[in-house]
Image 1: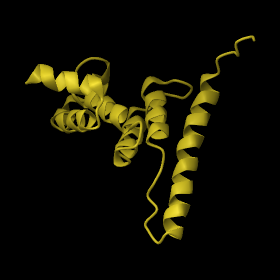
Image 2: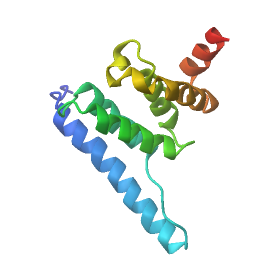
Image 3: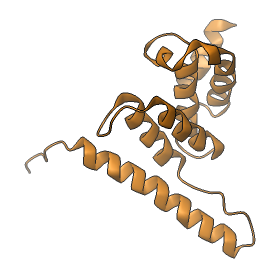
Image 4: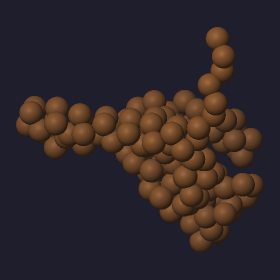
Amino acid sequence: GMPLPRDEAKAFACFERAAQTATQAGAQAGAQAGGGGSCGSALGHFNVGFALFHGVGVARDEAAAVAAWRAACALAPGDGAEEAAFSLWEAFRGGGEGGRVGSAKRDKAERWLRLSAELGFAPAIEELQAKY
């Protein structure tokens, strides 16, 4: 078949809808079970954060990206939380592409790297091994 044209704005809308839908479904299920209902899709939140941070299909918004990645991490060990934690480490460490968020938050970077490694993300594990 013919490849479809790339539509980054539509992709972002799908990521956002997936994260919201999963969150709403989790909230309803949790409420019915008598719990708080704080569930969602860590992978959906990770994808939203990635798109926001890099301006893929949406205007770049680093603060919103960080919020999306934190939401993904709150859903650990859900798939996507490990990459979100690693992305937060990259954003807060002050080096490389992720250094744009600001060096004032570098002290939090280690926390995110450790979470990513605890969740089994190979690049985070390798980074910690190289440090120690």
